[in-house]
Image (cartoon, rainbow, N blue to C red; front, side, top):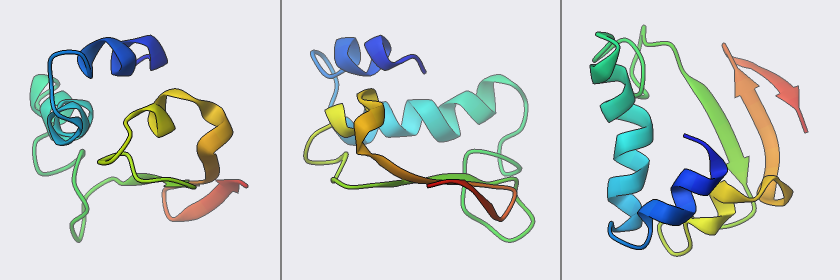
Length: 79
């Protein structure tokens, strides 16, 4: 999801629903439910480590300033 999309969606959705759309919902759309968009053994998982709680304030996902680390395929690639 683009940063602007997080900000737009917060106007009509709860933060948890925005996160689900960006993860499990996106995986379902591309036919990868259970393989992506989830933290499970054997799933493809990329993670963001943030300096805030996106459930309290979805803007922490919309502003790259809040991203502390990026973990891609099990390796820290940024931060």
